[in-house]
Length: 598
Ligand SMILES: Nc1ncnc2c1ncn2[C@@H]1O[C@H](COP(=O)(O)OP(=O)(O)OP(=O)(O)O)[C@@H](O)[C@H]1O
Ligand SMILES: [Mg+2]
Image 1 (cartoon, protein in one colour):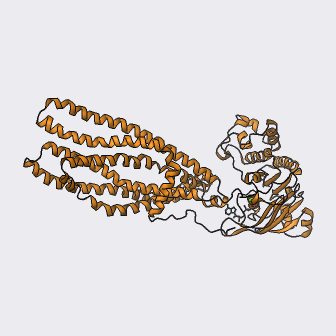
Image 2: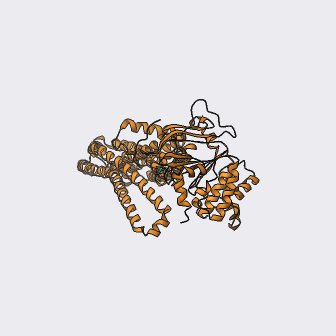
Image 3: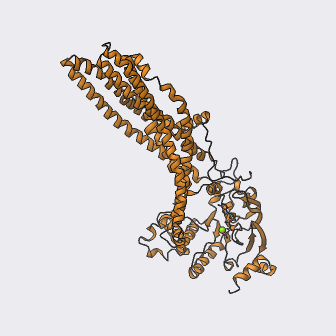
């Protein structure tokens, strides 16, 4: 097992361009997320090409319009030229409407599917990952980073499909009129190469920074809105907004540079255009004045070159847009590349414990969330069918024991056995199904009360549900709810009181009827009367199964078969209530404190 490394919250990304890596990223995106849409994209590109060609057709039509209709006055050409010009606009209207809608559809599909893939992957990652990446940060990565990929379908592919064709056709028209004029008009284009390379680097680096600060802003927003009561009570509204404003400042700076870098390419092509136009005017103008060329020639050429610079400018932006996309792709790929550390074991699985043999053994377990170990060679045994209590001061590592036992995280060294078998060798879901857990802060979801108790279990009879609900004394407050069990409990259960939420969590644990019961301060939020009642129900329940219970209030654990006293990640005393009192150590002191009557 590896030793934990201290990692910063947002790991720095390589800011320098690495073409091989970029190609790999593009390939990954293509193979996993885009390839399935190839027919749609190809159809879109055909339409884009039609749209793109129309500028060339339009400029080519100017020659007959000037030379044949306006100058030579050929009546029979009027209708044809008019039809031709009208036709180009109709083709443009229909094709662009169709491909824009089509590309938006593909973009949304790709992005939402990627969001689902990311969410699914993130749900599978362990506690230390989630400790380093708070919810707001992850929300922003799932929603924000992927959104940047829209540009691929709504900007980059149309740029390529439409603008490339525009450029080729327009260049063709211009060359058809006069290749020398064309060369003169484009004389400045090679000068764009060097600054383009520089601007790409800027856009990429700033793109990464913009995404980083966007995630930081989302994290702050998430914390602000979850802590809104605390903020209001402590009067720190201004402090909070000031902190947020600092994050936003970084974000704005980076975004503006991305936009500026992208736009700079367009502006440089404008300068090149100005130069080209001036030169052509001088050269071609004198030829026309001398009567060597027609006005129609010049009009068509002039229109073609004028039309040419707009797609050229957009194509200039393309490199920037692609760099920005790569910045997001890189971040997305990084997240998806995080290996789930808690995985199904390879090879033969260890059997799940036989009913009645779920002895829990911690054998010299060391564990750290980050660099500092939280558990130092922790060893204790909890016998099957008995109740074992974990007591000790706050921060001793009690909840961490439950975390390891249910494999939300894995120990760095030592072994944890259930029924004599190493839990890391057991089927992961099978292992977790062995436990009914009431955690210190169980999450409620914005669903109905019934769904919150069942948590996706479909094989629960109405009778079993009612039993759990009444044992947890949830039925006490259900009648007062507008739709009874079908009432939605609000985001994170916000429509319920703290004690009510805890009772729902207890009912949820009870309805699982799993062989091992893990209770972490399960009744701490209840009033004395309900606590006594719920405690009675839990005692009844634990009489028939293996139970580990964490409690600060020692009165709840005095009847436990065994009490394990923890301090700073170690076991300092073990025994039952009477032997521990007689020992006169840590437990006896705690007990004296709680029952001194003060
Ligand atoms: N997700 C986490 N990331 C990093 N450190 C953590 C995390 N959870 C807990 N810790 C640290 O691990 C130590 C043990 O925490 P744990 O929650 O196991 O304590 P506890 O004994 O349950 O305390 P309490 O009685 O207050 O619930 C604490 O020092 C805490 O700072
Ligand atoms: Mg705890």
